[in-house]
Image (cartoon, rainbow, N blue to C red; front, side, top):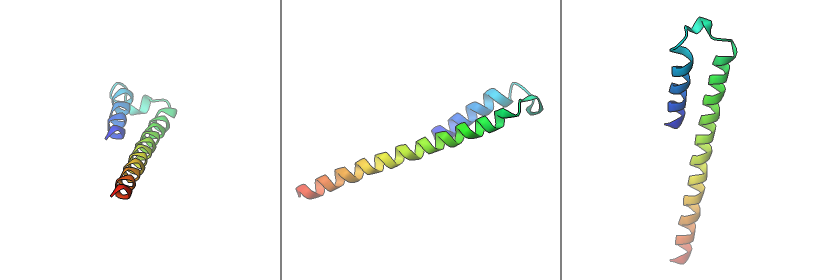
Length: 64
């Protein structure tokens, strides 16, 4: 969800104020890179949360 919001913000600030033809060449690559980085961070956060949940589940299981 955050990646989509960041992507929308990048599109908002870069393309709605200027025609796409007038954008410098680096902007689409920058926007794409930022979106990929945001997606990667989101996946990393999900993986970390899953790992924590698994450790909690194992700790609870060992106590019973």
